[in-house]
Each structure stands twice: as C-alpha cells, then as structure tokens.
Image (cartoon, rainbow, N blue to C red; front, side, top):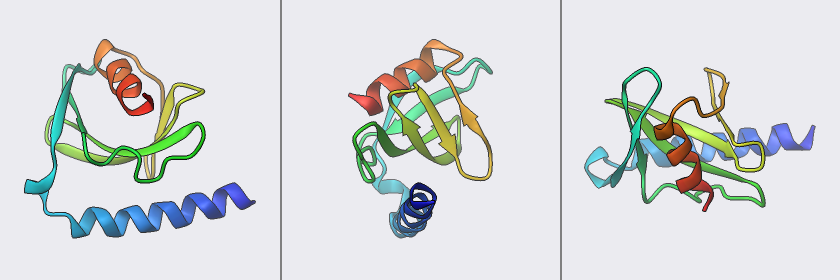
Length: 102
C-alpha cells in the first residue's frame, strides 16, 4: 500500500535526522502532565519535519524518554513506531496534539 511505503520512508528519514541531531539542540516545550503523571514535552523544532495535509511527525518525551511520533491531526491520535497508536488521555497529551497540529 502506498501509504505504508511512504510511512516507511518518512520513518527511516526521520530516524536518520534524530540520530544526527545532538540532544542539546532540541528545544523542549512543556505541555503538561500525561495521565501517568509524567511530564510531556514536545520538541519545538521537530514539528512539521514530515507534515502532510492532516498528519505531522514530531519528537516528544515523557519525563526523560524520547519518542518519534506521527500524529493524525484529523483523528486526534499519534503513532509511535514499535509501540502503539494513542489518543489524548490527559490535558498534557491533548495540549501536545493541539500544539503539533496548529
């Protein structure tokens, strides 16, 4: 399916970018707390690296664990490769989606 192959190319490209960017260059913006109590941050400079009509790729972290996510702005969900697809369960994660989809 074309969407899956495009997703694979974007994932590989962003994974390369992620390893090439030193962590000190990341500009984390606090979004609030996740339902688990962890702090939610979004990298201000990463949103839009892979933007399409209704989706956006971005880096976020929960406390100190960093993730590359692919947000579906229309469905208000995000996918993390190797994990799952999530929907906001807290004000912090809803703030994250609002921020990256603006």
